[in-house]
Picture: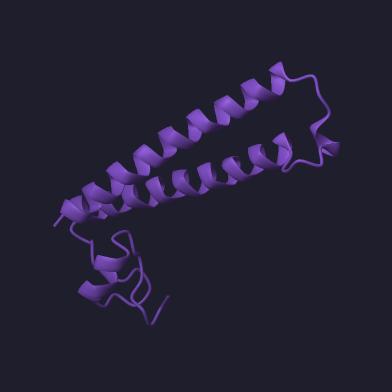
Length: 107
C-alpha cells in the first residue's frame, strides 16, 4: 500500500534537493554579480528567479510534509479514511493524490 507513497516521497525529496541547489546557485550568482539586473532589458531579474524558485521549493517541502503525514496515517491504520467524514477515500483519488486527507465530497 505504501508503494505509491514511497514513490511520491522519493520524487518530492528529489524536487526539494534540486530546488535547494537551484536556489543556492541563484544566491551565489547574485552575490557574485555587481550589475544592476533590475533594469536589464534582456529578461527576468535575479530577484524574480530567486522568488520563483523559493516558491517552488516551499511547495515541494509542503508536498513532502503531506506525504510524510500520509505515511504516518498508514502506520496508524487510518490511511484512506477521510479526516472530515470518516468514509473511505476512493482508490482513484488516492491513486491521483496519494497523500489525500479527504474524500472528493469533502475536498
